[in-house]
Amino acid sequence: MTRDGQQDPAGRALERVLTLMNTRYNLRLDIDALCEEAHFSRYHFIRTFRSRLRETPHQYLMRKRIDRARELLATSDMSVTDICFEVGFESLGSFSSLFHRTVGWPPSVYRARSFEQRRSPRAYIPACCWTMFGFEESALRD
Amino acid sequence: MTATISHINLFVRDQKKAYEVYVTKLGFRVTTDITMDNGMRWLTVSPPDNADIEILLAEPYAPMMKADLASHIRAVLDADGMPGGVWRTDDCEKAYEEMKRKGIEFLKKPTKEFYGIEALFRDGCGNWFSLTQRPPKG
Image (cartoon, rainbow over the protein chains, first blue to last red):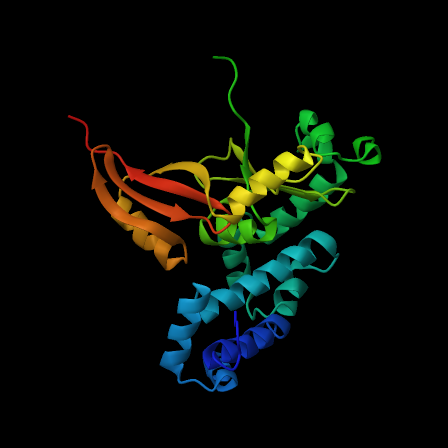
C-alpha cells in the first residue's frame, strides 16, 4: 500500500488499520475503533479507505470473516454455529445469510460440498484435466 | 448439436485474488474448489444465472502448459492485457454503477457505439472485458 511511509501518512495509517482488521477480525471492530487506530475523522477514514482499497471498511471486515469461515468449514469439524461466533458474527442468521450471498451456498452445504470434493475429486474434475494439471496418481486412485 | 461447453478456462495472475473478484465482488458461485496433492488448486466458478458452465480460474504454470508458454501468458496478465470476453447486459449504465460500487476498475465508461452501449473493465487479475448492451431490435 505504501511506497514510502514517510511520504504517505495516510497509507501508513491504513496499514495499521489493516493489520488490526487482519488479525482481530473476529472482535467487535466498529468504525470508531478503526478511526481511532488511523487517527482519522470518520468521514476522512471511510473516504480514504474506500478510495485506496475499493471497498468499505465494513465490506473488508466481512470478507475477512467469510474467508476464515470458508476455511474452517472446509477443514475443521467445528459446528457452523461455533464457526459463526469464532469469526466474529453475533448472529447465526446474519452469518448464514451473508455467507450464502457471498459464496453461493449456505454454510452447511458449502461444508458438505467441500468434504465431498476432497473425498471424490474425480467426480468434479474432468478426467482429461488430470494429466494436464499433473495431479498425482495417488489422488487419481482415490 | 449433442455437445455443449461445460468448462472454460480463464487465466488469472492469482487465484486468491480471482476468488475475491469473481465470487465476492461479482457474485459468481464457487462450483469446485479442491487443492490437489501437488498443490495445484482446481477452482471453478459459475455465473449466478448459469450453473451449467464452470469457469476455471487458473494460474498459468507447468504442467498445464510448457513453462515458456506459461511465462508468455503471465507477461500478458501482468500487463493487464488479456482479453477475457464480453459480458452482456440489458442496462450498461446500471451494471457499470453497480460494478463500480463493488470496486471494479473501468477503463471506459458506458459509451454509445454502433453496436450498442459499451463499457470496458478490468478484473484486476490480468483480464479485461467488454460490458455491452445491445441496441434495441427494430
